[in-house]
Image (cartoon, rainbow, N blue to C red; front, top):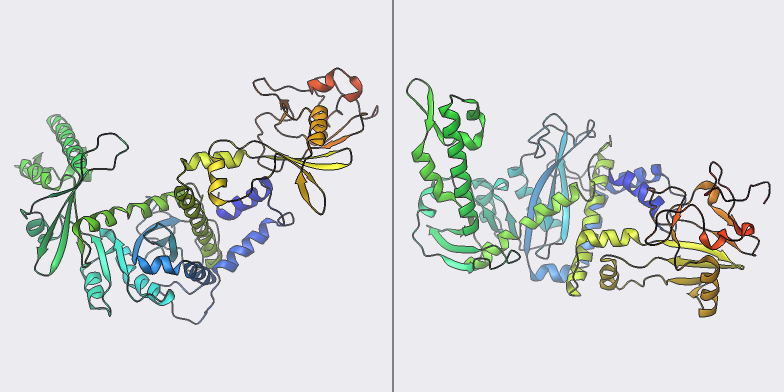
Length: 525
């Protein structure tokens, strides 16, 4: 479900004052508003114009400029998002699809994060834009938009080329970078860097338990004026060796049976060679050569950071990849059905704003030193319910208890949680008096009753005892048990035990259902 339709359902399921009259077409217009161009005749970057969403990003950045200027690291990565339809007037193009859907039109989305993991900005380009062409324009645009003189870019090997690095070096002032390099394709890295006999420095020792950080060894290698950092994870080295042994053993078994179908697998093909009259055999020399890459990755940098810092900074880049996975799954960025470029940009930008809020909440919980899990935070907040009741001429608001990790989120943000019972009027909301709460609980049995859902015919429950109860589910309803009420630890029941003894206090019948066979007919009431 996309962000616009998700917002429509969210509005219906949650208490959001002021949104009662909003409809789906209002949300569509808001999407277009966020993605509309603010400089129609202005210069475009890789086909992406300057939009209203850029102004919002710049304003958000200004609020934390002091933090950012102290640490000038920027993590950058891209992903692809495919469309269910054409994909707008110009954004939807066919290209290298990271979701393995080459049959669909797509767009390329880039995102920049600061060293704290806070999203800075997102960029959107046509789907046929190559990753290696994005880094130089985005760096130039960020320096202009956010008025940054110096910036250090952290990107993976798929984002850079030799031309990119040369452009960074020649810029004024030079752009600092920490980037991954391709070990097998670059001769200098394959021979001089990996062949270096420099000593390893143990940055992180082997784990003593599963929650410890992954082990890490690093060493620095200079080739003329170019600085490389070689990183080694011993756990990954052992895993790579084990996986390769399993592949080779499987290949030998298949080739012994004359099966050549596995040759099309890239992981297998590198260990084969042709011998004699077109027969495939295991390339033992290549198998041996692959050992030198086990558990290793190589970085190139022109920064003044020490070797250990460079390695740990690059590992933080994986947080960007995790954010992309979050935006595609948890935040439901896909599917995208919009037909106009501006609504597509607004749609994706809403997911970006949600990531900003998510990161801010996580940051505050960490600063408060609280134990939490994101799924439990969402589960607890989602279970929080509020019930409105009119009793003896007064209006009461009752809420459920905080569950899971919802209390951690409330404490970290400093938000005042609604009272368990509030006596509300048009002018003020105040805590229920002990006498009033006791009377309310005695009459309604509020301590025990859990409202599951309310059928149309049971919205209004009247009795001769002089009170009217209006139950309105304001938060998400559990539709697993329609039109029923239950007590903790018991099965769903069809009536109120506190009223069952007195026929005059039984609730009215529903429109299409009698409640446990005990109810007053509409004609009798």
